[in-house]
Length: 495
Image (cartoon, rainbow, N blue to C red; front, side, top):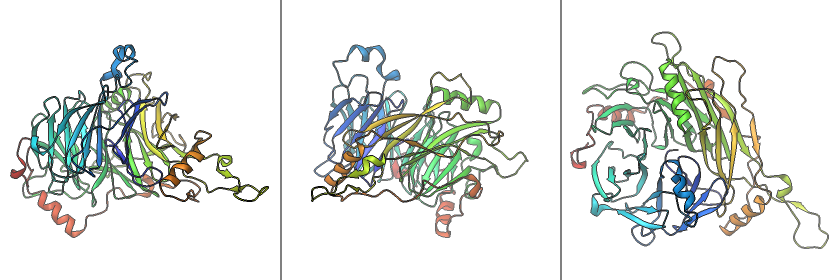
């Protein structure tokens, strides 16, 4: 997702993780507040520090955002090899106390503290987001306020309440022009004017994962445990509600569909990510100019599987006013497996005792991002992409790059594969995982006995999201009575 992922269960409970935008580095904040950064190409630990005071004893990090210079620092970073943190940029870490700290990774020093005294939050911070230049930071917290910060001065530029339910996730378009806030309702905001330009309704539960496509045309959300929803993010898909009116869940003001597709998976969704990179932006824009659509995204689930979906083709079903038909295609599914030989352990006790099979361990994947290959032809929809994975040990993670199949246009039948692709972790990983899990108080773990992740794709789902309950529908209708505050309004003037 655009925000970082919490590893809530497994071998590293409470570890907060994030890949940078280029997937060149991986950051992890452990439960004790220690920040570590690794190079994903070499697995070298580039930085390690305790960032700073999160607001008192027992304060816990809750979210992380990353801002790096374009190109990772370029030649200046190469000339400064004596500085382990050179070219890493800055990270912002939010806490359950409402405090946000900004850390300069080059020097492992505290660059700024953003707190209530500077116009900030008084409660648990849910999400953080830098703009493309790192000059501005957006934050959302349990106090139901979103704050826009000027990073250099540490001052709040403006704050507002986008939704009376409280915002859980944020996303920003690649050109910094559109901010997305996600609660039960998705809202799109014009950053320059501060106006709400669109509302996308239909979630019955809070959104816990949010991503915006490279070209800014689509949104992915995960709400509840096992469902992923694909949305149109352009203004034509869902304009702001008219006073005294409102639109049905999943419907746009103009009658078109806001929610293009809903997917159900067998296991809990941990994160959703669109393909990143200039080639992905160019492909999405070229498809839009041709009256078509291009998208590719990855979903990480709790069973240790990653699934990649793609669509190349028109968005509508062809007939005017007809329901949207978006045949998403699973172009790759990946499952990590432990080498059976690594799961064998000698029986304890008597000499000569036969070796007994140890409990099989599930290999954790902490993060999975798609990156469009830079050598792709500009605007070419059928370009290749690499799936970057952070997996294995929480103390010394392993990084793998897996080539994903080139997606075929959706009018090409029998293209692509939905078979699970096995990726073998390092040879000694089983022992390391077992030791970490035991140290954390576990007694070993047996992998699920299923034959692989069962994916219920678009063909199994209704074209719209389920209808909201009466209570939620009434609340949503109440929100539709007004367009809400603009970015420039103070919280006390909001709904």
